[in-house]
Length: 365
Image (cartoon, rainbow, N blue to C red):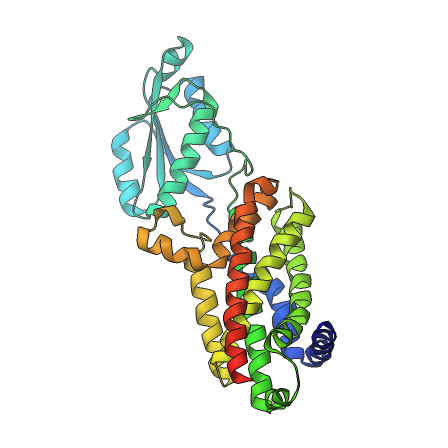
């Protein structure tokens, strides 16, 4: 059995190196897509147009204004002493946010009395407004623990673990790695096996003593090796260009990535047993790998905020488990005690999909 599996793997390696299109899909496309999406996709909000209404005119009020400008998120575009000047600025879109420091602010601060500053925000774009509000709270809390935003409780100095500067790249890049590896691995294996069907070489296997599991494992090993190399390249790019280093064990990262890729490759083989042409295989692979990984894995949208029915559906999306383990290892440096259950889920997914692919292949052989 092992000898026949190795023979299939060697044959597939040779075929893979001759097929530059498949090699390009598996080896180069993940890195290119990571570069494109990594620079293009960002939740960071910068150069927020800020107006400051300083009704106190003291050194303390100027320190609050300067704290906003030093943060690097805000650009001062207007100033004054009257809150009524803000209405035309917001109506015309000249400003996105405004800081209002009331009279008596400096005296209250000097007397160690709780004081209030007002932060006015354009909420037309809810996503941007939420991010800007988080920036404002962080800046106000850094000025003094007794300063609070109007209408809210006193805010202490915030501590942000794992991503202290709140860069969206550290959240998005691991998700991009999961998304790109899944899409490229599923498409590559599906096309490779269907290509054998179109050439008629699958028919000759019926005359051999080879069983389905030998064929599938032998065909998967080369793609797993190449995809693992591509995953290493993608993670290197994430570290070098997007400042997303691996804080945890490289061995743990390699193990989890192999489990994820094995499941993706097995899924590609399963699709190939259902499709008869490369065009159908490509379209099916793209739909069933891209959309669930993008929308139902927690890559962009938190699973906890989804309806219960949709949350249940996410349990059959392997990227959901890989993302939890990947972020735990890469961002937090967590050990297996944190993500072992995610690895078990990936193993279960891979076994189930490989079992279905084997059953389908047995019928065809």
